[in-house]
Structure formats: C-alpha cells, structure tokens
Length: 116
Length: 112
Image (cartoon, rainbow over all chains, first blue to last red; front, side):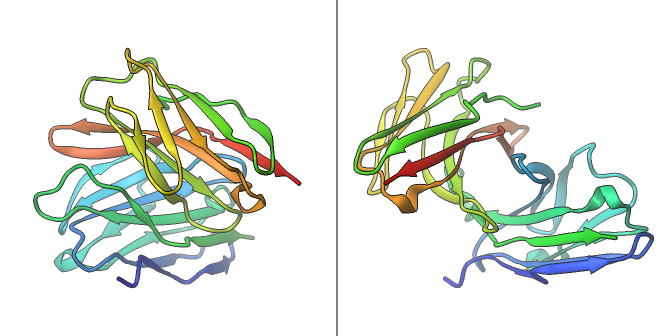
C-alpha cells in the first residue's frame, strides 16, 4: 500500500493559463474524490468517481474545471483559464473495494496551486 | 451544505484528555460520522468513524449521543504531536453514491 499520490505538490501559474493535476489512488480502490481547500477552511467536495464514471459534481466545479478517470485508475483535474480565486490546495482521496461501503477515505498530500 | 458545527479552537494540556465536540443535528439515520485531522500542509488523516455505537481504536474514542445529533472525539492522553485541525464529517448517501461533507474544523493546540 503506497498510499494516494498527487503530482505536482506545488504549482505556480499565471492567470489565464491551464493547469492539470494528477492523482494516483490506492490500487484496489474503486472510488475517487477531489476536494478543494482554501486557507482556514475545511476541504470542499468537488467531484466523485466510481471506477471511470463521474457520478457527482459540485456546483463549485465551474465549466473551466474538468476531471477524468480513464480506465478507473488514475485521475486528472484540469483547470482552464485559471483565475486568482482558483488558488487553493487540491486534495484527492480514494476508498472503497467492490463490496465494502463502510470505509474510510485515504487522502493524498495535495497539490498547492498559486495563481499569480 | 455543511452538516457539522465545531468550535473553532481549543487548548489542552499535554497528557490530559482532549474532548472535541461536534454538532450534527440534521444527520440522517444511515449517515456515518467520521473524524479526521490535518497537520499543516498535509492531507487529512483518518482517526475514527461510527454510526450509532461508541467506538474506540488505538488513536481515539468516539462517543455518539443516543439521538445521534452530536458526538465527541476523545484523545485520551494528548501529546504535542496531536496539535492539528480536527474535522468532524458526515458521510451522506445519495442514490448509492457517498459524499463526505467536512465542517470548518477545530484547531486543537496541545500545550506543554
């Protein structure tokens, strides 16, 4: 169990640029979550995958945000035309084997995005 | 759509029990309560979870009131390394999908 891996750990970009983050969940986990966390706040739910299917998206996820999980393995979160308000920590978490539903989320260390 | 409320901060003396309260008065019957903690610049770390019975593990105890409207996380012998933000979370189920809703957390400071 190597845990949930997120890359990069830090990303600095200029306003208007596109950025992409990657999350590698724990290998047997079929459920994957993305959260966003701003300074002093708790993580806010963005989106959720079960295998490759994106089952729920928060209204926080504007049209500039897109997430994918091809083949139900790693996931990417892309932000197009970044704005300063997108600056935050983006957290990925995974859980869930096929039959178990009463389970804990395992979080990665996050990607800290700074939009200048 | 936060479902939990917690005090923003608490202090606890090293070696004493830390009791962190959480209010979740709108919780539904099948929604679990989870507790996580977060140390600066790291991802949240699982502590414990429960549905209606009290739970204990090597890290902490979770006491859930009979009406399930509130719970308390107990760290029996707090150490300096327990200084962190503690989040009380409700796991919401909608049509077979699960969403973990974080509150704003309690910043616990353990004092030497």
